[in-house]
Length: 377
Image 1: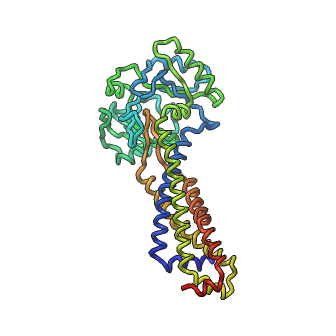
Image 2 (image 1 turned 90 degrees about the horizontal axis):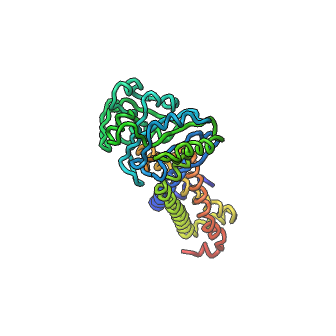
Image 3 (image 1 turned 180 degrees about the horizontal axis):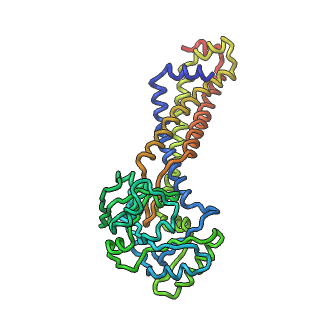
């Protein structure tokens, strides 16, 4: 039945090609939206192994307005439950929700690998970074997006740096930023030595996130620079509201793409049924039951949906992988990275849409009276 359905589809190459192209366009949009939704979920959904807190200036959002004394570090490290902490100065080219955000993170050179031992240098060397005050370790996604290689120099946000190495990490944020020396970024940003944007703190276990956060805020409540401390993913979800609202709106675009594909395949299969009334009647006279006629039409709808879906889904995944798109808001970056789950979901949706769209045309074809069909045309 599948073989016969495939032959029937390619008998009308132009019509079938246009239908599959329309399905591919709809599934391309659906896959892009699904990738954005899943990428956002990965950085905002709390998990059992989350142990990172972000200490920020109270009632501040954009990194340029959050300023904390660097000497808070010693007080934070003394709090029970804190395993390690690192001060971070952030400079970003745009605080609003936008594409292609450039983010510099200034950190003490001696603390970076101690705080994040999972950082892997894929090109260049850590020694090369520590030997130059203007050196940067650039995340793999950031480097790919900006076409940067070790030894290059680039300037952004008024900061001119030398690329000492390319890094990758299991933490999505690390792949989309450039790490530079803290004193260098403090001076380049003209905020002065001794001031940072935030502190990232790792606690002993996920159960200690809330207790430690309360202790940190209580420690600095009466200080001139009070803090607000939240788990990293909660911090992302609360701070990047513009970006989350923007991605939330794309959900409706995905539903629109699904509806368009459903209508397109249903219309194409109906045209197939109406154009082959006499052929269907001949098949019935040769022994095809009404059920088998319905199955044949359903197979054609399935193949139209699946073939167009495969092209659209795979094209979207390859496009997003090569382009390395990111969304940024309030100094936070979200990499739009496809996953194998998105691939399977897209193909499943294309298959289900093809099947659903062909049910009514298949019923129409199977219920057409034989004598009336033979007399048609």
